[in-house]
Length: 257
Image 1 (tube, helix red, strand yellow):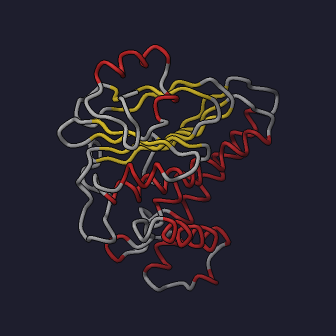
Image 2 (tube, rainbow, N blue to C red):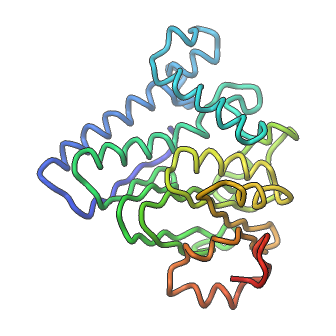
């Protein structure tokens, strides 16, 4: 999938190693079928018209169905066809991470985190997750903490303007980064991509209307904007500093958190 996956298991048991081997094999299967970086993957062959959807494995139909759902949920700001090519990566990575976490739970782990390309699904906790600052290399925009969290970020810092705006056309560059915090990563990650494409005028307000979702946006000038409930996810050691360094009010709330 063009990225790196990592696992942290706090409560390993006799079956953990075998479970991880199965999970890694499953991730390789997902990559072989759904990676647009591989010309021989089913999704690449489907995009070139060499296969029909019915000739592909069941993962393809599931992923494309979920992509259609998210496109509807986001008023078309999510798409499996950026720039006109078939690429469901905006769903696949978060879905694969969430799937791996679910498999670890089934193997008996209640305390773990799975990270795919910087997006994280945790089980149990508490966990501390740093959100990279998109404008200051090596710095953090915030640190969130909690139990059973999903944290996803879209931005331009590492891969440039790689998120496509399917409504306005062209690359999405209105925000430096957008982070969503939720409970399950597949939708949280896909919604992050879509909300980032919405740009600064809509992203945070749209996220604020999603039940169980909180957002932190960093604007190109360094200004930060967040949903009213985002502060409850902040690590205690950073909460006081957050109040001091914040430069804007949470959208829809009164004083800064």
